[in-house]
Amino acid sequence: MKPVKTLFHLNSSEASKKSELLANIKNLQKDSRIEVEEIQVVINSDAVEMAEKGLASEEYIKEYLEEGVKFNICRNSVDNREKIEREELIEGLEVVESGIGTINLFQEKGYNYTKI
Image (tube, rainbow, N blue to C red; front, side):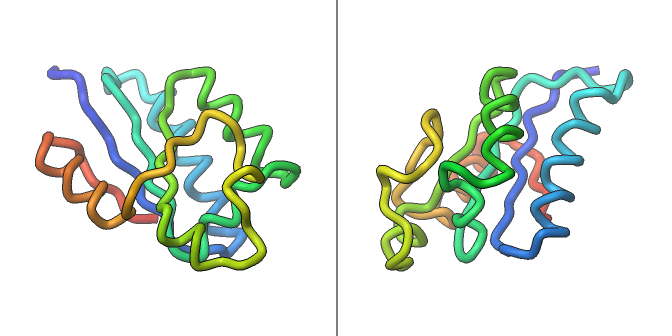
């Protein structure tokens, strides 16, 4: 089987959706039938809150970053939230111009898209 490139997309700040994203990443990594080439995550809209330092999600995101999962955070979404400063984002995250543009670019490159 050909190695897969997967793109997860999260735009909800609901705790259940954040948990679902983190669980789906782990499930994909553990699936013995799948050879994972790369996992990319695009986080935009209200979901950018999970990218802040000091939150419960930081531990999991850092673990996934160490495993090679790449997180892309929408600059527009961060800039539109007065309570989030870029300096407050977890280190290692890629701030991209727009989440929706980034999704389109990954899909053009053949990534399998999964909306959470």
